[in-house]
Image (cartoon, rainbow, N blue to C red; front, side, top):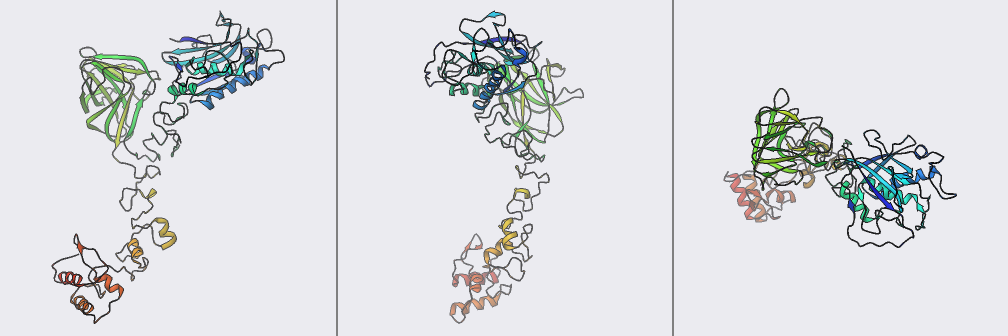
Length: 559
């Protein structure tokens, strides 16, 4: 059933200096626009054509076209100064704001001598008629008092009704704001010098239309439940990166994320009860789009008495829960389950369900006492269905219940912001090649390999000499020449690729001073001390180094 409410703006006979208390003073109406926007048909030439019913303007005042343009500007004023969004169609007809939306669905604007057949109050300038179904606004329209004379001007209030600022006020009612107790607000119940939405007005709109406080309204926010001022959307799928389970759109998911969901952002005050002994079971089916571990369900369920059992079940041939649990757990009333309405609540399974992409499952709720599943004001869920049962095996159809399903993917995208369906990872560092600055893992960046060292960024050992390109660059050898290798501390003082008695004799002569070693010979012989069985060179060749080389030749140690 559609219900109509009206909001009135009164005339201020003299302009005044407005003041603000600084405290939040906005008031919200009981209904609001579930998708954060309203579309209005503006056609004053049709609603108030030239003649007896044309807008009553001051002598020499604005044309009907100018008034219409001012109304459109008033809509834009809310778009530019709040998180609500108005759109408009001009010169394409209108519907009477006072007529039920079942027969006259268009939101519109008119001038009239009466307010939906009743007399305007002596100081009433305009009335906003808003129609709602439950908490959802479905139609709104402005009725300007045509027994008053109207004008357009930008200065302080003169006592003559100024059309545009009154329109801004009425459109504030249209989006769901009642009168404010802040005299500086545009929603103050008496017209005056204020022309634009003020801080209090903006804050009120944000309560309804910016739940994540990122200054992007519900109508435009690509992640309405996750703050993301930038609205970044790498794969341009309309789902912002902040809440997109597959940021780059390559079919491989970033991490655990909501897979299927319905209605959690438009919960109403109505609910369906289910209790032990009488329709104790409620269920909602859903599709699975990626394989993984289903660990969490989000449900607007409360249980004033008794516990709740939740399970994930497969479906039978008719699309109903088949009684086969993939996961099941009991949640205690008052601890795991709220006893009163708390909105959507996350329920975590201790043992998650293993699910496969392409399957269809159901979340099944069984009341062991008395529970309530709150429903949404949104349209039906096209990808699943709601069910009820007294025994958990024979199911009947009912409304679609709001829910959210969180799945941890079996494969995590190794480049979440760069499309790479193959998930190629040459160096197995869990960073995909598509976004890895060092694809071959040789400690040289791809750019440096291509532009400085002229090595192969897809081959960690470009010259196949068993030393990585990074090791050779660090040691000063040529990574593109197999004959040029790093000098390493391995005990092979003479560099003949074998650690043997010849190295011991050369080391003795170095210590006796009969041989002056080269820098490379010192580097190869500087094997002491050993740390964890690996040489930790100290830059000096001494007796400790020679002792370790002797032990290596005698096969007492290896490194």
